[in-house]
Image 1 (cartoon, rainbow, N blue to C red):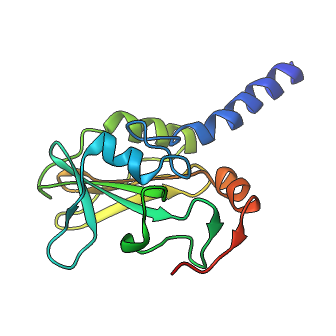
Image 2: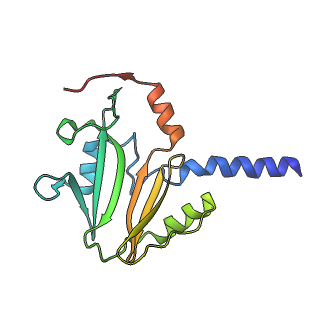
Image 3: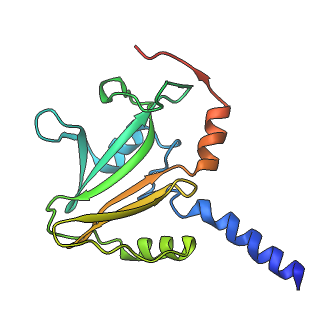
Length: 171
């Protein structure tokens, strides 16, 4: 009985980092900017001075980038430094109309089941969110539904990635 419990526990622990491994075949710390552009098309500027985003149906996809071969002080690089070989660091998805919900209830439900948490309930005009650094996944909810999803590498993946690189200073 102890062996069975240990096997189930190990399978459960191994499954956790797989939850947020990717979004639409975009993998944090693996997918390049060139590959993202092939999948989502050219990015657009958000307002005049805001970050760029990619159109995805009724949603905007914001991606933060990092260098592929070395580590910068804050891990994330400015968009103007993100060449074709820059790697996805984080993915954020938001609806274009804040009064709508993103269609990802299944993913949120699976996430809450893994961390054994209850969904947050947003008050009228407010929002709430739950995230988990070990899993590399989080979400926000407003009175209209899911208002943001965040995908990043799991803490384990991030530590492994960092351990294989040296610090650098981007220009």
